[in-house]
Length: 434
Image 1 (spheres, helix red, strand yellow):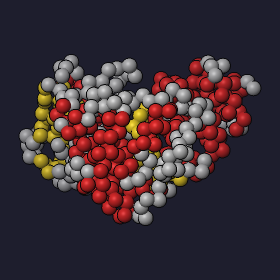
Image 2 (cartoon, rainbow, N blue to C red; image 1 turned 135 degrees about the vertical axis):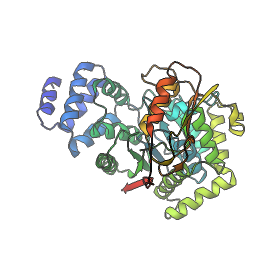
Image 3 (cartoon, rainbow, N blue to C red; image 1 turned 90 degrees about the vertical axis):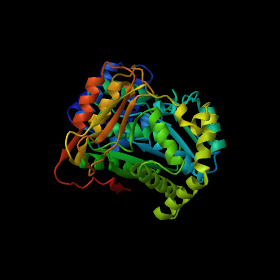
């Protein structure tokens, strides 16, 4: 085959066959196609899209570009959850142990943060000693023993996706629904799951800022799962403002521990319970949402969810002392308070501005090789719909380095808009797609 002719076919709006797609991804994975040609193909796909058959073939070829995991020796139903990412979205951390404590096996593979969106692996690695890089045998052994694992993607799992994502990141082709959906679903299907729950974020702090686009992405991924024999449920959830109170790495671990202890902010708790109930339904553990929520509440109240998290932290080399005393986690040395300039009602707490502000403090990466400061970040004190007085604290910036403080202050101040009249807070969950 000629790779150039395939590029021309897709560039001109033509269709690629399953054999075409299998060949191009196989050849690229084997280093027989250069990055510059694959970049051209990715741009053609970005511009022209993939139809349903092309998308199924593309996902399948990526899925089989490396190892496909086999967890058939694990007796419990294997259900995972994936979020498309947002600001303050630490839901995976309390969710996985709570669902695992209910009897579901959760082989959770997560990623790192880039830009204003946080990464679960970066948060977990603020626990001293915690290892997120596990080879497949160790990953499998921890899953079998403890019913859950929290780790990164291995080098041999869907390697085509890792290489193509790096190209997309530097060629302006990240926000493509076919490329996003095949990237996510190829990794998840390689886990050999019995079911998957997706949290598709929409709003200023999400990849999808419009509801129609979020709905299209959710529907596409549910369809990919159906075509591969895996049941997928998607929730479209709000990311116009941060989830929970904390935006930072160590601080989000503290907030996750609060949830596992039975506390935590109401919006984060609601997302954890709803996603978890969906996972329990897919795994056949719960009959409906109410039953699923009741089961999750029971394992949190009994301490079983917290103990599950502690067991897995220990199994992955982490220091469990920080779970009993979260003050041992990294914490920045300085604070700056962002306050309300006037009295009124909060009509906007822009997730993007707050997230970029926290990134400027060192909580995130502008480039892949940037080093994260685990102790810095932003605590959000006011949500959309709240009434505040002049001088009320809207956010607290925790920082160590003054270099970018002024920019972080400006971004955070501008993220909050206050008006005379009350507004209704956005719904936490917009829609579900099955």
